[in-house]
Image (cartoon, rainbow, N blue to C red; front, side, top):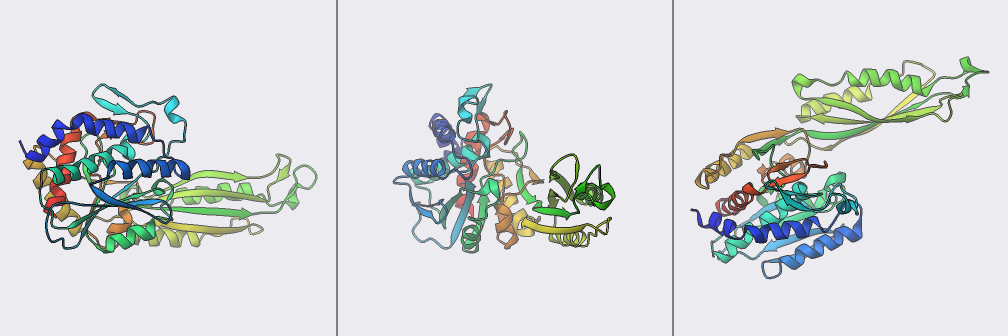
Length: 375
C-alpha cells in the first residue's frame, strides 16, 4: 500500500476527531466571534506544522513547514471556515457517526476537507517526503456570502501560485473532481409606479406590482437550459397595503452562466428592459459577482495529474462541472490552473442530511498529499 495512504488509514480516528472538533466549533458567515474561535482552533492544531496569521477580514493564512530544501513558487490550497448554519444548530443537528458516515452542520461544506488537508500535510511532514513548492492554505470566512472581503486576498495569492486546489466537496457520492463551475450573479430589478387609492382613484395609479409581474415573465424567458444559462427570480417585495395601488416593487434575481460570453449577453438583456406601462420607471442593479470557472487546458491537465495519482492509490477519479460557485472561480478566471472538489465526499451540503462518507477519507488524504508532491 502507498505509504501516505497507509498513514491516513492508521490515523483515521484522529482525522475524524479533528473533523468533529471543527464541526462542533460553529462558524456561521457574519458571526465574527464564532469565526475567530474556529480560526483559533485551526491555528492551535497547526502548531509546529505551519505558521499561521490572520489577514484583514479574519481570513486565515497557514504556511506549512514541509520537507524539501529549495522551494520554487507556491501551491495555494483554498477553503473556507464559514458555514450557512447559525450558532445553535448543533442543539438539533448534532455531530454523529452513523451508517458509515459523519453527520453535522458544515461537515461536508467544508470542515472535513480542511481536516483532511491538514492531515495530508502532516503525512508529508512525518514521513519526511520532500515538496518542491511552498504550500499555503487560505481559509476564508465569507465564501458563503459572496467573498467580498476575501476576494482580493484570494486573487493576490493565486497570482503567486503555480496551481490552486480548492477543498470544496467533490460532486456526488463518487466525489468527482471539478474542472468547471458556472459564474454567479445577482440582479435587482426595482419598479417605481404611482400610488393611488385602490377604490376611489384606481385609474390614477400605476401599479409597480403589476409591472414587476410582467417584467418577471420576460426575465424568466432569459433561461436557456441548452446553453446552461439559468435565471431565477428568487425573491420579490412590494406594495404597502391591499387598498393602495403599489408605488414600488422589486425582485432579486439569481443568474448562472457557463461562460463570460453568456454573462455579457445576459447583462445586455437585463439592461435593455423597458417598462410595459410607460407611467412606470424601472432600474436594474447588480451583475456577475463570481466569474465562470471555464474548463481550460491547464485545469484539465491538473485533473489528469490527479486521476493518474489516484489510480496509484486505488481511486477511480472522474471529472465534473458544477452550477454552484466557489472561490476557485476567481483563481481560474486569472488563468491559474485550478482543480476544485478535492475535499470530502458525501451529500447534503446546506441541508439537514449533510454528511461525509468515512470510507473516502483516507483516499482523499492520500490524493491531496500526492498532488502537493507532484505539482
